[in-house]
Length: 601
Image (cartoon, rainbow, N blue to C red; front, side, top):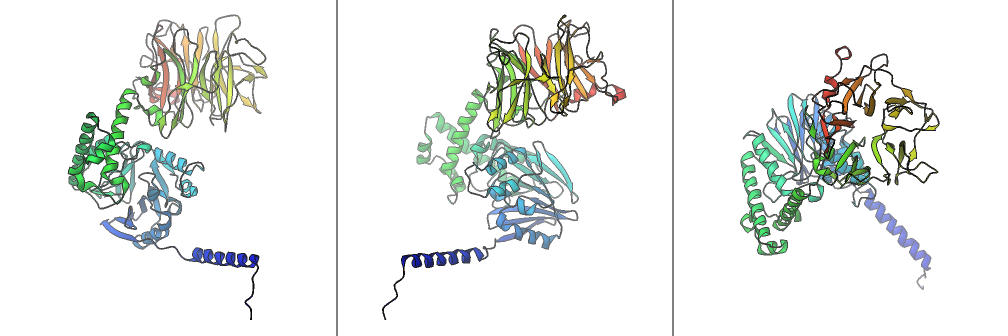
């Protein structure tokens, strides 16, 4: 019998069926279970070593479980089972030491009702990873599911299961988001990936890391904790303070060797070829590229270059342009930002703190314009003209509460005109996916608002100052936002407005106080120049009489342009000597509460 001839279509169909069966077979097979070794560090502290690679730490007790890092998504069910076996309690807290996949991917499956704590920069990094346009091969949903519930940039203390737990940021070495977790009564510290005992360290330069900062962080670890403390690292065996000193010596000596080679004009490739770190070869770990001598040489080289550049041209990182927060005495804010400008007039941060706008001019003849800086990957960009800036005078910017609009004063031509406006009006721009919209003049009561110095409260009420047509008098007004439009202006009354000039202003988001720059008042500290005054709203909705903010704020010079930071923790204002020096100052906002009348406290 002749063999049957099959048509080409039948052969293709059979092949596809076979392929589908193979795929289904692969999909239906159970994934390999993770290997998890459980090591009891203390009675209440377990180290879970997943696949002989990453270490998780579980603090167990009558109140539940606190978990430091969550490992891989694939091992989450086994982690749950182990925790149930050893404690039976619910996971109440998760602390992520940083955003590496092997430390956060289990968040989504393990968090359930837990509070997830991490550094603010950790969340920013996770949000970037989860961006569909970010080139990373992991499931984006894992990163979104890993977002922390609570973020912080200062030390946090928890009291849980009878222990004091200190969560301490130690950033700038491995990354700019690292935190360590200190179980004080237990004498255990979780370091995450901050150091790599026995190997050259991993420093992520593109994520805010720096070899020199790592040395400083290790010095701090040695000084912070007692000799008998146990350090649990993200990968590898536990370490001690004594071993940290040896590690610190390695860091200092290898950095010194590379820097000496740099002074001799040796290239990175020459350093690698000559094996200049051969005396420290015991720390070379060729199993991972990141922990080899070659990588460490390059890291030191690039860190040293970056440090030199930062001294010459500072790189600003972190909240509020990376500035150290002030106390109760006003301090100059970010003077290095304004070196190219002769005068600055006002400044404001966006509600999320990731944009900074200021008005400035570069010379006496330069018109004031609006400039902005943005925080990208935790670093602030250099100042550049804002998208809505014009060729005319623009200044005094304020955001709506949801950041969807920005209001400012401008002398640009009004619609239908080709000549600059002589009096100045309030304008606004709307934030869209493509950026800021073309600005439009603000209308109150259906009419273009000729006014200046705007601010807007959380409920949408617009505050501003207007000049009387027949006098030099300038008063503060407000306009309520009703049915999608601003109503006709209302004068704030005699407690705020006087026969003198009430100009620049800021109002708290909840309208509990208003700060105003007042000119030519006889009780001004500067003998007639501008001082800052404050009024508090009373229970009946009326305002207290403006009071001078005192010598802590006001001087013989001009103080104006008041603003409040988005988190209401800091008070900003300008100080101008009337000639050639204009600076931005900031101070702890507690100074405002101290001025509140006793009957309103």
